[in-house]
Image (cartoon, rainbow, N blue to C red; front, side, top):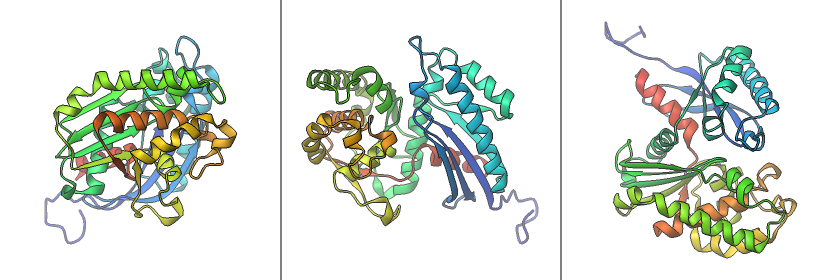
Length: 322
């Protein structure tokens, strides 16, 4: 019991938490100093561009090389977390492992090698947890919130006025997946770009009814590295200005820049502001998905939220502890 707390209270004091996030592009370890009811404060970050979505065979199975690199990095994250004094380390996987026929075998291999059990999140859970993070970031004054998140393997959309969204959907339209399946050239041909745009819009259009039925949002938000990079290309503040600098991704500016991005090679895209060499191949697919999402939902812009799925996981964990 904490000094000064009433007898019998369930006071939970400050603690250091770690989250391993296994995405389709990168694997992140985020370490935060956390306390129920308070903002989690980042203490350290550690990541690797693993690109699990590129270690997949024609049957969708994750290759042994990808599996082994994942296990190695989880072990590395474990060591970093111990060095950082983490009391509670959690890990989760998203679409790349979730959808692989041998995904469970990959997770069992990781447990055997490291002892770390990685939880599988469904697409809807991803959408709901990302929504929670955005709601906490913008607060109740944001009113009805619509959140769009583009990962490596999937696109998540969620809308609502509470901390639990009224509707949440996940679509296999991540930047890595769309690049791999529809935009293979460097640069892709104009016909391939046109076909990718058509197929992305058709896929989003089929899933929009639950989101559209929730009504016009008071605030539309974009999360993820892809969204942040696109906002930077379109003139948003650089990361050096800090996480509290307001940033937005305007649809008209994105539409204006999209043809130029499509005509560039990956090396040329890596010269754009906010685009790392590791993300350069995928940024065109991200732009196509983001523009389609905004257009089909009638959104003029997306405000960029620095919090996303990892923070949502931490916040939900803290809520359950508090």
